[in-house]
Amino acid sequence: MKHVRAFIISLGTLLLGLGLYSGEKIFFMGFAVIASLIFYALITNLWVLMDFRYLQRVTPEQATKGDRASLIIQIHNDKPFIYPYIKVFYQIPQSALINEVKEEVLCILPFHYGEIKEEFTCELRGDYTLGIIGVEVGDPFGLFTFYTNLLNRSYYKPLRLSVAPRVIRLTSLPLPQIQAEGTTRQEFLPTEEPSSLSDIRQYHYGDPLKKIHWKVSAKLQALYVKNYETNTQPQILMFLETFPFPSEGIARYKVEDQMIECAVALIHFVLSKWLSLQLIIYHMERQQLSGRNPGDFNRFFDYLAALPFNSPFRMDEILSMESHGFNKGQSVVLIVHDMSYQLFNRLCLLKQSNIHPLVFLIYHSPGLKEDTKRMIDELNRREIPCFPLHTDERIDEVLVSEL
Image 1 (spheres, rainbow, N blue to C red):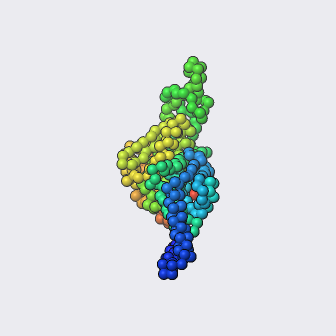
Image 2 (image 1 turned 135 degrees about the vertical axis):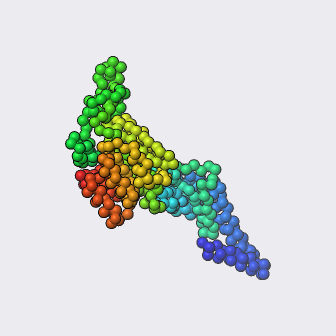
Image 3 (image 1 turned 90 degrees about the vertical axis):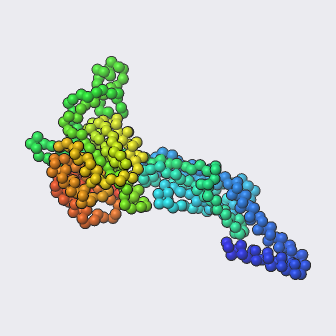
């Protein structure tokens, strides 16, 4: 394009010089044509940028991980001349995560529109800003190109897409149970009815029919269910490591997404069994959520869907601060992305104190390091279940293959 521009300007200069030297009209006429082309190219480009019109939409605006979505961008040409060259720069979730820009070139006839349709899979949870971010226009003669950043325009309105975590429904989960004789073994969570009535609340979709309090429901003309104290099993504690993953780019986002998906699946399973659960997360301060029935799941889900990973504390530090409050026989679920020697030693000490950890290690590299493998094998040998979970695996498939 620079060569074309240099050639046209040189030709115009030559024709003007010849016209001034010889006085022949033909040279002036040639110069007038060249000048008109340059003026037309300049004016049309500026006109397009000053009066640029587009429409865009994303469908759906709220999705769940794994869903398909589509981005549609329409560039409208309501002017009486052709858009011979217009390059559109835009982003979809995958490109936004790695800070890259997609582009596509259009040629739009007068009073028509060009359309870009991009279909994609919502692979990771999060809130995304996507759509068109800039355009580059060129004239029919290839003389000029102009770029405008739409993010700086007052009328620019970005599209937003919210992707919620996927809820994987587990069929079983190994948690250590204390036996009457004082030994421990690994078994599936029990589903027997607890014995001590705690309170009564309104029925929620998914509540077991056997928990309906029929006398109260008949009297109040609405379904009510019974809440029970889980006095046969101590409260389950869950810790999620939100210390930033030590890698930038897509690897970090995949690890964070897998950790959230793992936590959601475990919480859904535990609460669906009407077991008492407490989720503890450290940022700059300690945060916790408690629940004991399926109706509490949405609170956990909404919290985890928007959870940032910016904690200054690693899991071994969290356990050091929390372990004094653990009860003997208690089950502690850990979701981590780093198996350090400090964490390994802390887990062994908990086991010796009659605390029963269950560990999920999330990793992204093609394989685990040898020292990490050795620590995992040693933890399992000491009856501390530890499941390595790659970012491309599903927790339900890993549990089925391991159990």
